Length: 225
Image (cartoon, rainbow, N blue to C red; front, side, top):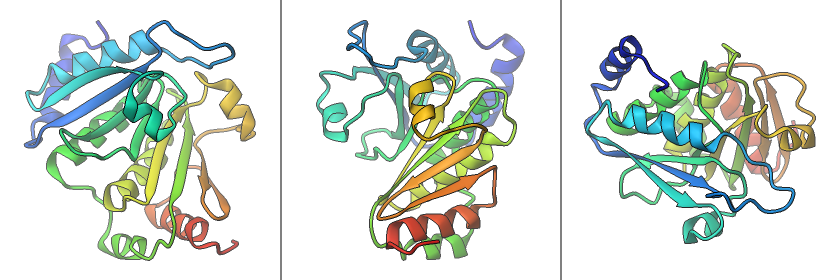
């Protein structure tokens, strides 16, 4: 058990506003790791998400194979566990978390479930309007650790933008579970957000939403910072 009775009661209260079904789709290797493949805490991730889902009737968890599931193949997913968070039955695939959303990232998980289940993103109207100017697709990878109190702010900024614009793919990445991926981007501190589009941008720290919106627009419009 990950959540004791006290925490369960707190989380149940936080999830109470959810009115629409939300699903957590977890892609795992099911013990079929490929040579050289980085694999995170799959069993722990499934266990935690199932405990959370049990606290609200609108939440559900589905486990799928990273290697054989058609959606995983279509999306080019290659890290396990990868969690897709979305309205149940929707085709949304642009809000993702790689690894175990524990520690401070547990709050990221809960806030995202609330956003999807209530339709309230907390992204300002001006930022929402600016985001519609995005010319081409971008991908945010926000590297985090469970002990970082500033990381949820950065991950949630990406998730809010992805919620309002399908051209934005936002991923939270638990850096310590995927050290090779972290080294690829020279991650030395967290939160560190890599934004890949027609150009690449980088946002260090837990900045205000508008900073992330500006960086996304630059990455997606081919404008060099």
